[in-house]
Structure formats: structure tokens, C-alpha cells
Amino acid sequence: MPAGVPLVSSPADRFDRIASDAVAHVEHRWREQLADVEFAVDLVPAADDEDAVDDEIESAGVALARVFPAEGSTAAHIVLYRKPIELRAHDITDLEDLVHDVVVQIVADFLGLDPEIVDPGFDGEDDAP
Image (cartoon, rainbow, N blue to C red):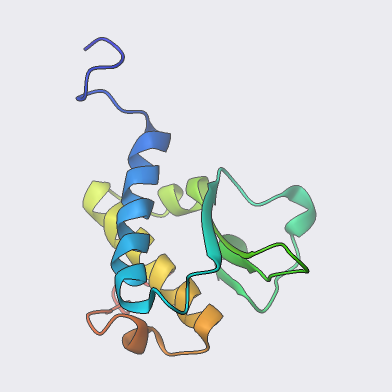
């Protein structure tokens, strides 16, 4: 298919769509608490971000998502790291489940809640990062 035809999407576009859907699902219920939070996707964690921090979801020592707290006039950011998440997924369904779980877990950490409270349908036991 030629570029620009809806059937063609890059892995980055596919991931962005999956992440956007997962964020929208959580934001629907927590709109007020997340009103000043910006969500983003980066390819990988920055090289200087190797140390584990409290506000991070990681797997095998690699960050999958991180909260960057608000500082001054800068809003809090929640960043998902595309490559580390993609490398842990076996197929597209697994990727969708994993992204959802990571978003729920990082939002739960940010809000200081259990993931099951953030999303009552959360079941991260089988495919937790």
C-alpha cells in the first residue's frame, strides 16, 4: 500500500494509537486528577536516566514508564518508553494488554492508589512488567 493509505502505519504510529487508547481509558475515570498531567511516548529512556527512581515502572532493570513531577510552571509528565515495552510483547494483543497495564500502573503510582482502584478491570498478574 502506498504511504498515506489508512492501512499503512508505522510501528511508532501503532504504538501511539495503542498508548492513546490506554490513556483515554484511564483519563475518562480520573479526568480531574490528571487534568494537569501531560502524557508522552519516547523511544527509549535517556542514557542519563539509568538509575531507578520511585516513580517508574521497570522490567529487568529497564524503565517502561516514568513520572516526571511538576516543577515550577512545568506540568507533570508521564512518559511511556516504546521500545522496551514493544520488546516485551509477543504480538499486537499482548502489546495492547501490556501498554494498558503499564499506563494503569504508572497512573496508580502517580495518584498514590492501587492499580485495581485506577481501573477496576485491571489484572496485571498474568502479564505484569
